[in-house]
Image (cartoon, rainbow, N blue to C red; front, side, top):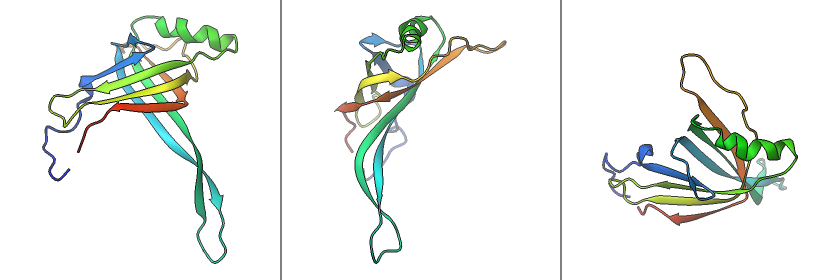
Length: 144
């Protein structure tokens, strides 16, 4: 992009989140990171170590206003029983002033933990979920 205007950055309040088709209206934050898994490659005649990418790891988190017990009911029993619940997560930011909208789908997601109790006097209650994912697809991207 040659010139950025002040109206171009995505505004998070224009974001939406779906988990297995369920629109999560109480969402506050969503983050997902794809990290390369690398092996060190020592090489003769080089003082530095090289690296070879051998895979990737997907991790993320989402934070919500605590409105219902939906996510505790959805994930806690499976963790207790030693089962893994997989889900698809879709994030979309559709800001009319941005240069486009961005929609990313994460596949075979699995939560790491569930807070059964998390509140404090004088504060709005929130819940946060860390998760892993195995694959992704960017279905819409903001063009430069």
